[in-house]
Length: 346
Image (cartoon, rainbow, N blue to C red; front, side):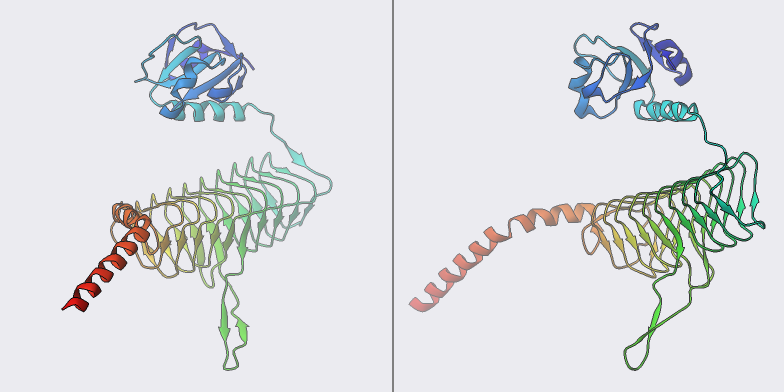
Protein backbone atom coordinates (compact mmCIF):
# COMPACT_ATOMS: atom_id res chain seq x y z
CA UNK A 1 0.00 0.00 0.00
CA UNK A 2 1.09 3.57 -0.68
CA UNK A 3 1.01 6.35 1.88
CA UNK A 4 1.72 10.05 1.42
CA UNK A 5 4.01 12.07 3.63
CA UNK A 6 1.00 13.92 4.99
CA UNK A 7 -0.84 10.69 5.85
CA UNK A 8 2.23 9.37 7.64
CA UNK A 9 2.74 12.65 9.50
CA UNK A 10 -0.89 12.66 10.61
CA UNK A 11 -0.57 9.09 11.88
CA UNK A 12 2.62 9.95 13.80
CA UNK A 13 1.49 13.43 14.94
CA UNK A 14 4.50 14.80 13.08
CA UNK A 15 5.32 17.85 10.96
CA UNK A 16 6.02 17.68 7.22
CA UNK A 17 8.98 19.67 5.91
CA UNK A 18 8.89 19.47 2.11
CA UNK A 19 6.37 17.91 -0.26
CA UNK A 20 3.38 16.52 1.69
CA UNK A 21 2.08 14.69 -1.40
CA UNK A 22 5.09 12.43 -2.05
CA UNK A 23 4.18 8.74 -1.76
CA UNK A 24 6.15 5.74 -0.46
CA UNK A 25 5.41 2.01 -0.34
CA UNK A 26 8.49 0.54 1.35
CA UNK A 27 11.28 1.12 3.87
CA UNK A 28 15.03 1.50 3.37
CA UNK A 29 18.26 2.22 5.22
CA UNK A 30 19.27 5.85 4.96
CA UNK A 31 22.62 5.07 3.31
CA UNK A 32 20.92 2.86 0.70
CA UNK A 33 17.66 4.74 0.28
CA UNK A 34 15.79 4.41 -3.00
CA UNK A 35 12.90 6.37 -4.54
CA UNK A 36 9.53 5.29 -3.22
CA UNK A 37 10.88 4.40 0.23
CA UNK A 38 10.84 5.87 3.72
CA UNK A 39 13.90 5.92 5.97
CA UNK A 40 14.88 7.50 9.28
CA UNK A 41 17.71 9.33 11.01
CA UNK A 42 18.21 8.61 14.70
CA UNK A 43 21.93 7.95 15.19
CA UNK A 44 24.04 11.13 14.59
CA UNK A 45 26.67 8.88 12.98
CA UNK A 46 24.43 8.62 9.91
CA UNK A 47 23.70 12.35 9.56
CA UNK A 48 25.86 12.79 6.38
CA UNK A 49 23.61 10.34 4.54
CA UNK A 50 20.52 12.54 4.92
CA UNK A 51 22.04 14.89 2.35
CA UNK A 52 22.68 12.12 -0.19
CA UNK A 53 19.91 9.57 0.36
CA UNK A 54 17.56 8.87 -2.54
CA UNK A 55 14.70 7.93 -0.21
CA UNK A 56 11.67 10.16 -0.66
CA UNK A 57 10.79 10.53 3.03
CA UNK A 58 13.04 10.69 6.10
CA UNK A 59 11.82 10.57 9.68
CA UNK A 60 13.90 12.88 11.89
CA UNK A 61 13.78 14.04 15.50
CA UNK A 62 11.97 17.32 16.05
CA UNK A 63 15.27 18.92 17.10
CA UNK A 64 16.98 18.17 13.76
CA UNK A 65 18.28 21.21 11.87
CA UNK A 66 19.59 20.81 8.31
CA UNK A 67 23.01 22.24 7.50
CA UNK A 68 22.62 21.87 3.73
CA UNK A 69 19.81 21.34 1.20
CA UNK A 70 17.96 18.00 1.46
CA UNK A 71 16.08 16.57 -1.50
CA UNK A 72 13.91 14.25 0.59
CA UNK A 73 10.75 15.28 2.42
CA UNK A 74 11.27 15.30 6.17
CA UNK A 75 8.75 14.32 8.82
CA UNK A 76 9.71 15.74 12.19
CA UNK A 77 8.58 13.67 15.18
CA UNK A 78 9.44 13.49 18.85
CA UNK A 79 11.55 10.36 18.34
CA UNK A 80 12.42 9.11 14.86
CA UNK A 81 13.31 5.65 16.14
CA UNK A 82 10.04 5.19 18.01
CA UNK A 83 8.10 6.56 15.05
CA UNK A 84 9.77 4.04 12.75
CA UNK A 85 8.82 1.24 15.15
CA UNK A 86 5.20 2.42 15.06
CA UNK A 87 5.18 2.43 11.24
CA UNK A 88 6.77 -1.02 11.04
CA UNK A 89 4.14 -2.33 13.45
CA UNK A 90 1.42 -0.84 11.24
CA UNK A 91 2.98 -2.40 8.14
CA UNK A 92 3.17 -5.79 9.85
CA UNK A 93 -0.46 -5.58 10.97
CA UNK A 94 -1.59 -5.04 7.37
CA UNK A 95 -0.05 -8.30 6.14
CA UNK A 96 -2.50 -11.16 5.57
CA UNK A 97 -2.72 -13.48 8.58
CA UNK A 98 -2.66 -17.26 8.26
CA UNK A 99 -5.72 -19.01 9.59
CA UNK A 100 -7.29 -22.42 9.90
CA UNK A 101 -6.09 -25.83 11.02
CA UNK A 102 -3.74 -27.71 8.69
CA UNK A 103 -4.84 -31.23 7.83
CA UNK A 104 -1.43 -32.59 8.87
CA UNK A 105 -1.63 -31.18 12.40
CA UNK A 106 -2.27 -33.53 15.34
CA UNK A 107 -4.56 -32.11 18.01
CA UNK A 108 -5.65 -34.23 20.96
CA UNK A 109 -9.40 -34.35 21.42
CA UNK A 110 -9.10 -32.91 24.94
CA UNK A 111 -7.27 -29.79 23.76
CA UNK A 112 -9.14 -26.46 23.69
CA UNK A 113 -8.56 -24.00 20.85
CA UNK A 114 -9.95 -20.46 20.94
CA UNK A 115 -11.40 -18.44 18.09
CA UNK A 116 -9.48 -17.72 14.87
CA UNK A 117 -6.50 -19.90 15.81
CA UNK A 118 -3.98 -20.93 13.15
CA UNK A 119 -2.27 -24.32 13.46
CA UNK A 120 0.35 -25.29 10.84
CA UNK A 121 1.49 -28.61 9.41
CA UNK A 122 3.04 -31.25 11.69
CA UNK A 123 2.09 -29.41 14.86
CA UNK A 124 1.57 -31.73 17.84
CA UNK A 125 -0.86 -30.56 20.53
CA UNK A 126 -1.19 -32.83 23.56
CA UNK A 127 -3.84 -33.56 26.13
CA UNK A 128 -5.59 -30.68 27.89
CA UNK A 129 -3.58 -28.06 25.98
CA UNK A 130 -5.27 -24.64 25.90
CA UNK A 131 -4.71 -22.12 23.08
CA UNK A 132 -6.25 -18.63 23.23
CA UNK A 133 -8.02 -16.58 20.59
CA UNK A 134 -6.14 -15.28 17.53
CA UNK A 135 -3.00 -17.22 18.38
CA UNK A 136 -0.79 -18.64 15.62
CA UNK A 137 1.03 -21.95 15.98
CA UNK A 138 3.43 -22.50 13.09
CA UNK A 139 4.71 -25.74 11.55
CA UNK A 140 6.28 -28.44 13.70
CA UNK A 141 5.56 -26.80 17.03
CA UNK A 142 5.16 -29.26 19.91
CA UNK A 143 2.90 -28.44 22.85
CA UNK A 144 2.98 -31.21 25.42
CA UNK A 145 0.19 -32.20 27.80
CA UNK A 146 -1.21 -29.42 29.94
CA UNK A 147 0.69 -26.60 28.20
CA UNK A 148 -1.12 -23.36 27.42
CA UNK A 149 -0.76 -20.22 25.30
CA UNK A 150 -2.89 -17.10 25.71
CA UNK A 151 -4.54 -14.77 23.22
CA UNK A 152 -2.80 -13.09 20.27
CA UNK A 153 0.46 -14.98 20.73
CA UNK A 154 2.77 -16.49 18.10
CA UNK A 155 4.81 -19.68 18.30
CA UNK A 156 7.11 -19.91 15.28
CA UNK A 157 8.28 -23.21 13.70
CA UNK A 158 9.90 -25.89 15.88
CA UNK A 159 9.14 -24.23 19.21
CA UNK A 160 8.81 -26.83 21.96
CA UNK A 161 6.59 -26.15 24.95
CA UNK A 162 7.01 -28.89 27.54
CA UNK A 163 4.18 -30.20 29.72
CA UNK A 164 2.33 -27.77 31.98
CA UNK A 165 4.32 -24.73 30.81
CA UNK A 166 2.32 -21.51 30.48
CA UNK A 167 2.67 -18.69 27.94
CA UNK A 168 0.61 -15.51 28.33
CA UNK A 169 -1.11 -13.11 25.96
CA UNK A 170 0.61 -11.16 23.18
CA UNK A 171 3.78 -13.23 23.40
CA UNK A 172 6.16 -14.11 20.55
CA UNK A 173 8.41 -17.16 20.71
CA UNK A 174 10.80 -17.56 17.80
CA UNK A 175 11.88 -20.69 15.96
CA UNK A 176 13.64 -23.46 17.84
CA UNK A 177 13.11 -22.08 21.34
CA UNK A 178 12.68 -24.75 24.03
CA UNK A 179 10.51 -23.83 26.99
CA UNK A 180 10.48 -26.21 29.95
CA UNK A 181 13.33 -28.67 29.38
CA UNK A 182 14.75 -30.17 32.57
CA UNK A 183 16.92 -27.97 34.72
CA UNK A 184 20.51 -29.12 35.21
CA UNK A 185 20.00 -30.99 38.45
CA UNK A 186 22.13 -33.97 39.52
CA UNK A 187 23.15 -35.35 42.92
CA UNK A 188 26.57 -37.06 43.01
CA UNK A 189 26.77 -40.19 45.15
CA UNK A 190 29.74 -41.51 47.16
CA UNK A 191 31.22 -43.09 44.03
CA UNK A 192 31.03 -39.88 42.03
CA UNK A 193 28.09 -41.01 39.90
CA UNK A 194 25.49 -38.39 39.01
CA UNK A 195 21.91 -39.23 39.93
CA UNK A 196 19.29 -37.20 38.13
CA UNK A 197 17.01 -35.00 40.24
CA UNK A 198 13.54 -34.99 38.65
CA UNK A 199 12.44 -31.51 37.66
CA UNK A 200 8.75 -31.36 38.56
CA UNK A 201 8.06 -27.61 38.20
CA UNK A 202 7.22 -25.63 35.07
CA UNK A 203 7.89 -22.37 33.23
CA UNK A 204 5.49 -19.42 33.42
CA UNK A 205 5.84 -16.70 30.78
CA UNK A 206 3.68 -13.66 31.45
CA UNK A 207 2.08 -11.29 28.91
CA UNK A 208 3.93 -9.26 26.26
CA UNK A 209 7.13 -11.32 26.39
CA UNK A 210 9.27 -12.00 23.30
CA UNK A 211 11.76 -14.89 23.23
CA UNK A 212 14.41 -15.26 20.51
CA UNK A 213 15.32 -18.21 18.32
CA UNK A 214 17.01 -21.21 19.96
CA UNK A 215 16.73 -19.75 23.43
CA UNK A 216 16.22 -22.28 26.24
CA UNK A 217 14.32 -21.72 29.47
CA UNK A 218 14.49 -24.62 31.92
CA UNK A 219 11.59 -25.80 34.04
CA UNK A 220 11.86 -25.38 37.79
CA UNK A 221 12.97 -28.19 40.05
CA UNK A 222 9.85 -27.32 42.03
CA UNK A 223 7.35 -24.49 41.53
CA UNK A 224 8.09 -22.23 38.51
CA UNK A 225 10.77 -20.55 36.44
CA UNK A 226 9.14 -17.15 35.76
CA UNK A 227 9.58 -14.58 32.98
CA UNK A 228 7.65 -11.49 34.02
CA UNK A 229 5.55 -9.20 31.86
CA UNK A 230 7.15 -7.20 29.04
CA UNK A 231 10.56 -8.89 29.11
CA UNK A 232 12.44 -9.22 25.80
CA UNK A 233 14.95 -12.04 25.34
CA UNK A 234 17.31 -12.37 22.36
CA UNK A 235 18.40 -15.50 20.46
CA UNK A 236 20.65 -18.14 22.07
CA UNK A 237 20.00 -17.22 25.69
CA UNK A 238 20.10 -19.85 28.48
CA UNK A 239 17.90 -19.37 31.54
CA UNK A 240 18.25 -22.08 34.16
CA UNK A 241 15.76 -23.65 36.57
CA UNK A 242 13.92 -21.52 39.13
CA UNK A 243 15.23 -18.24 37.69
CA UNK A 244 12.90 -15.25 37.90
CA UNK A 245 13.23 -12.35 35.44
CA UNK A 246 11.57 -9.10 36.51
CA UNK A 247 9.18 -7.01 34.43
CA UNK A 248 10.38 -5.19 31.32
CA UNK A 249 13.93 -6.50 31.44
CA UNK A 250 15.97 -7.24 28.31
CA UNK A 251 18.87 -9.51 27.51
CA UNK A 252 21.00 -9.97 24.40
CA UNK A 253 22.35 -13.09 22.73
CA UNK A 254 24.49 -15.70 24.51
CA UNK A 255 23.58 -14.47 27.96
CA UNK A 256 23.44 -17.21 30.58
CA UNK A 257 21.70 -17.11 33.96
CA UNK A 258 22.35 -19.91 36.45
CA UNK A 259 19.73 -21.53 38.63
CA UNK A 260 17.57 -19.78 41.24
CA UNK A 261 18.84 -16.27 40.47
CA UNK A 262 16.33 -13.42 40.71
CA UNK A 263 16.70 -10.57 38.21
CA UNK A 264 14.92 -7.31 39.09
CA UNK A 265 12.68 -5.08 36.99
CA UNK A 266 13.97 -3.04 34.04
CA UNK A 267 17.37 -4.74 33.99
CA UNK A 268 19.51 -4.91 30.83
CA UNK A 269 21.95 -7.73 30.12
CA UNK A 270 24.11 -7.19 27.03
CA UNK A 271 25.65 -9.96 24.93
CA UNK A 272 27.47 -12.85 26.64
CA UNK A 273 26.69 -11.70 30.16
CA UNK A 274 27.02 -14.53 32.67
CA UNK A 275 25.27 -14.50 36.05
CA UNK A 276 26.01 -17.10 38.73
CA UNK A 277 23.30 -18.98 40.60
CA UNK A 278 21.30 -18.09 43.73
CA UNK A 279 21.91 -14.34 43.34
CA UNK A 280 19.63 -11.31 43.66
CA UNK A 281 20.03 -8.56 41.08
CA UNK A 282 18.62 -5.13 41.93
CA UNK A 283 16.09 -3.31 39.75
CA UNK A 284 17.50 -1.24 36.91
CA UNK A 285 20.88 -2.99 36.82
CA UNK A 286 22.72 -2.76 33.49
CA UNK A 287 25.49 -5.23 32.60
CA UNK A 288 27.63 -4.42 29.58
CA UNK A 289 28.85 -7.11 27.17
CA UNK A 290 30.76 -10.11 28.58
CA UNK A 291 30.27 -9.03 32.17
CA UNK A 292 30.52 -11.84 34.73
CA UNK A 293 28.44 -11.53 37.90
CA UNK A 294 29.53 -13.83 40.77
CA UNK A 295 27.78 -11.95 43.59
CA UNK A 296 24.42 -10.35 44.27
CA UNK A 297 23.91 -6.73 43.22
CA UNK A 298 22.17 -4.71 45.91
CA UNK A 299 22.41 -1.17 44.49
CA UNK A 300 19.63 -0.41 41.99
CA UNK A 301 20.07 1.48 38.71
CA UNK A 302 23.82 0.95 38.41
CA UNK A 303 25.91 0.04 35.34
CA UNK A 304 28.45 -2.80 35.62
CA UNK A 305 31.23 -4.23 33.46
CA UNK A 306 34.06 -6.76 33.59
CA UNK A 307 34.71 -9.89 35.60
CA UNK A 308 34.09 -9.84 38.43
CA UNK A 309 31.53 -7.11 37.72
CA UNK A 310 32.57 -3.66 38.91
CA UNK A 311 31.00 -0.23 38.35
CA UNK A 312 31.63 0.81 34.77
CA UNK A 313 33.69 3.87 35.77
CA UNK A 314 36.01 1.63 37.80
CA UNK A 315 36.33 -0.78 34.88
CA UNK A 316 37.27 2.00 32.47
CA UNK A 317 39.92 3.40 34.80
CA UNK A 318 41.32 -0.10 35.25
CA UNK A 319 41.39 -0.64 31.49
CA UNK A 320 43.83 2.25 31.14
CA UNK A 321 46.15 0.42 33.56
CA UNK A 322 45.69 -2.95 31.83
CA UNK A 323 46.77 -1.73 28.42
CA UNK A 324 49.90 -0.13 29.91
CA UNK A 325 50.97 -3.14 31.99
CA UNK A 326 53.86 -4.09 29.66
CA UNK A 327 55.29 -0.56 29.88
CA UNK A 328 54.88 -0.56 33.65
CA UNK A 329 56.64 -3.92 33.83
CA UNK A 330 59.63 -2.59 31.87
CA UNK A 331 59.84 0.45 34.14
CA UNK A 332 59.77 -1.74 37.25
CA UNK A 333 62.56 -3.96 35.83
CA UNK A 334 64.62 -0.85 35.03
CA UNK A 335 64.07 0.56 38.52
CA UNK A 336 64.94 -2.79 40.08
CA UNK A 337 68.16 -2.89 38.06
CA UNK A 338 69.11 0.63 39.18
CA UNK A 339 68.41 -0.23 42.82
CA UNK A 340 70.59 -3.34 42.58
CA UNK A 341 73.43 -1.30 41.02
CA UNK A 342 73.22 1.34 43.74
CA UNK A 343 73.17 -1.36 46.42
CA UNK A 344 76.25 -3.06 44.89
CA UNK A 345 78.33 0.16 44.99
CA UNK A 346 77.88 0.66 48.73
